[in-house]
Length: 587
Image (cartoon, rainbow, N blue to C red):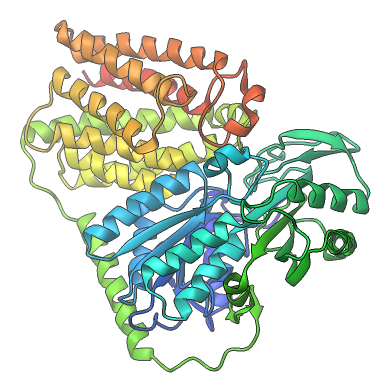
């Protein structure tokens, strides 16, 4: 378990602060993460990676020459927000465009996608690529749905080495695609991990058993088997990966592969070496030439006891990029000369970053013109957000337990971080005399930033849609509120791609929005209409217990979730009922 921490909510920020203090030779801090200590060479593509905390050396430890130009770092097991990614990418950009790279998780896909749109709007040519190497999380016919685990490293490195050679953005992206298509990973675990401040692991494995097909966010495996010997574990890993070869690798004999035996957090290096001796022998027997193997902790999951094996099938070009030198805090290969002194360039990018941060901070401290009616409505919004934060805090443990049945168990933690941050931002905006729309949009940005992950992106979208609909000029009536909820429902479906029946929050949001629109169309006052819609939401959330998830981290463990409601749907239903209470009190 994680023993050394102060406030669990501050763990990720404090860890990043300590990391940058320890590694100033390689990195410097920027809002949202870190970038190289020296500026990106003019015209070079900037490879910006990222993901949640808890996976060190991924992601911040992989920033440096020959590897990433920057890393956006989210909270514990939560993707960084679009605003954080945009900040890091802006600081790393050297004029050659940006390639955003991340593991294939719903929250990362949403936030990195939004960041790419914002960068493009800034005039920065941007592409995005999700690594999807975990063969246990989806079959070959659905490889685009696979999770990104330790295969992140060889794919990141291939793209970054290509960028270091001066290739243009489209060619760097093609290298990433080629490396991703030829990378496969598979893992096993002997115990789950325990997050800072938690008193129990996210999942447990019975005595003398192992979980097969692990994720890196505390997700349970897709199955269990008897605890193996080291040689038996090696055989399982190798045989599983050799059963699925890339389309253009018909036979492993005579092929070259980059090999990574990765420790997830508490398997000792000596144990890894015992396993690797058999991995190397088995691959040799299969005729595979191993190129520059890596054995150690490269993509971890706090204190999870587990290992994973990654094979990247190399051609001449990918081998050149895999062997290319790199110099980062946690990953070094070959030799690089001293970097060209470019303090002026680093200072320029730092100044640009500081200006962006100052502008963002100033926007949060300036009053926005608003009508008196909208300012009065903002008081009701603040009361509603206070109710949201209180109900989430009261049910955070329950939400985590529901989420842990088939997911990673962090839904309650993320919702607590997001809702409390949203309430603080709303309070500050209201104190400055902002209208209802501004109060909601400020809350939306802070919810997305502090929660990260899928829920952060979706709740940021919900609050922003409501804020846009309410605005700062009018006294919003029931019809206007219903219009905002309807737009929020549509925006969430557009952003996340889920529909009713996928076992997500959409299964509650759509019927809630429809019921609210119908009730207000009948002429019911807002509190009465909201009451009717909240009752619909509660029933819809309970109904998700009978569904199988088709999206998100619970999808690989679909059968385990039968009989349990979706955590996101349940939290939304709780929130709709809490908001109704606030509407009655504020009436």
